Image (cartoon, rainbow over all chains, first blue to last red; front, side):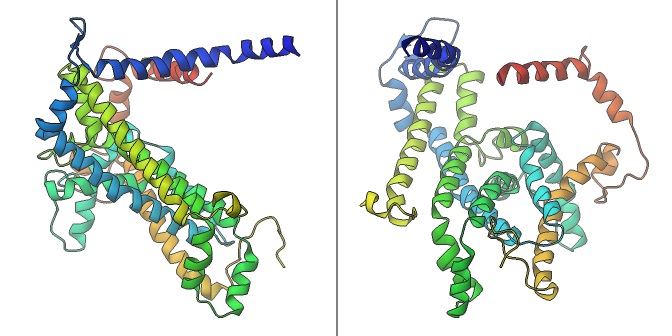
Length: 295
Length: 94
């Protein structure tokens, strides 16, 4: 027994070492660096709460990018999750060609947050790109998607929404677990399709809605590739998300201390929002068979 | 009674009721796929054509982009970059 245990520890050792060395160590280091001034060339200088004070009171660009990040998350997450649920609901029927549609909807998500998709998006939304070309044939004036600060955010949000596949797949699995008998009973009682969706489908899949919202929220707050590649944070910093600002401070201006402080603020915001979501979940998320435990 | 009891998936009642579903699905799949199809077409196009035509089929096929992409604008070929990505993938997934 004891011998087996030692062998087991030996087997998990590479993983544990990896996590400690490559995950926990940088994590702790960045927290430590956030209280210093560090430009890589010289050793870090301890400055206490200076970085945090600066970003809280003296940095308009931090406030701007925080606002952009929150706006992006508030637009992109409901749009992606809502669209994923809508498409999953439409797809959740046995019909001819269903596998084609499922693959088609998942394809953009397989490409992930890759540079290639960002470059594609840049072409599509260029001044004389495909989107304006299609709008032109409909008689709509070309829109400066990337150069106009009122539209630049939407091009990024649209890309995020376009890659709704992973949320959709999870929704599909959840929808297939809703007992068919409930719909049959509701139909006999005269419930419309609309009522069935809101009174049966949605309540029964709230745990999955909750999961998707949390996951997509975390993704949205970390969004980097799209604003970096497509709009470069512009125009007028209208797509300058926090991840970009952290990158610029750290790797362009070599203010690693300040960059670390920014990262920890972002982390605190995401953790806080996730905590808020978990707290709120007791009021709207329904776990079958867990009613007594949760009281 | 469903033939596959494990899956609670309703069948579309009848063809007449299914068609709105197909319209929605077809419209969404065009939005999903056309940019990708267009991108494949664009790899054969000249820059001028990319930014003037909305069709995906090139007017004349130009394979030059593939040749330039293989050579890259650096002293290394595409193979070097691919190998780097490949090695990172191998190492990152053990």
